[in-house]
Every structure is written in structure tokens, then in C-alpha cells.
Length: 186
Image (cartoon, rainbow, N blue to C red; front, side, top):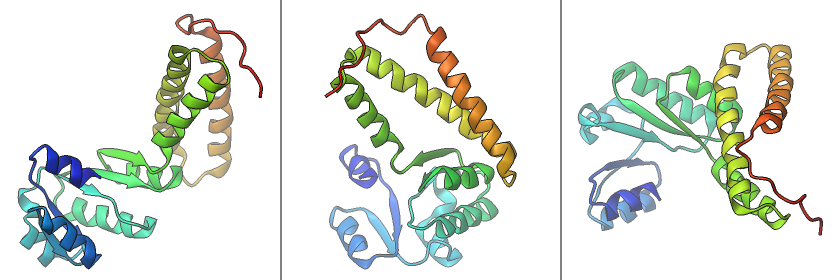
């Protein structure tokens, strides 16, 4: 999807892919694509990693993703890295490595669905969007705070419980949330 969007905007990119069919697909549209292991330094040099503005890490598997990010951080420390995270734990690992931007795989779609559910249950669209926006801001800040307690499960649990209370207080105290009728139940 990212490649298709870059393509329609006329933004050149180079892809490194471990699936030969994907390599052929990307090449059909006139983009550079290399087949192989993205941790292979010879392949990275051939692909022009030293001239890259940023790299997008969207590989399957947490361990593979971490290995790719570590390789880029070790050999191209100034390169900006945008990475896809499978879940919250994976996001913590990537944050710990200094990744510039993390997108959790199902996060955005879950927020979108939550908005639709709130609307279906009777919230006005602006109230539903504002609720989800506040949740997102709070959750993203919490994700960064939790990084301090990686490896200390009891502290992570305490932090999550405190964050739940903070979130409730945030919604209770927000005068900017428009009033809405209580959600209807189906």
C-alpha cells in the first residue's frame, strides 16, 4: 500500500523484498526492487541504503523486524526508521531501539471501528471522533511511558491500572466533549 501511494505521487523508492513475486510486481510499475535478505550489507549497499532519506521496516515477525532495525541502526545511525509493529510489546521493543515512527498493525483500524461503534450506539459523529482522538493521544503517551518499565511486569500492571484511571478522569473532566444522548443498545 505504501509503495502504491508513493508511486501515484511520483516519489521514487527502492524496495527490498524476500518474496520474488512481490519483487516482480514492484518492478512492473517501474520501481527499483531487490530480492533478498534486508540484513545483508552487500544488498543494502547495492540498493543505495547510504543515500536513503528514510527506511520503512514492514517485515513479518517480531524477531526479524528487530534484527532489521538493529542492522540499520548499527550501519546507518542517522537514517530515519518508520516501522510496523505487530502489537504493543513489539512497539515497546522498537521504541527502545530508537525507531522514529511506529505504526501498530491493527491499531488504526481498531480506532476507526471504535468510532463507528460509538456512532452506531448513538453518539454524534463529532463526539465519537473526539472520544477516539483523546483515547489515541492518551494511549500513545502511555506507550512511551511504559518503556521505562520494560522487564518489570508488576510495574507495567500498575502503570496500566493508573493509566486506566487517568483516562476515565480525562473524559470526565473534558468540557470539550459535546453532550450526547446515552448510547442506544441494540
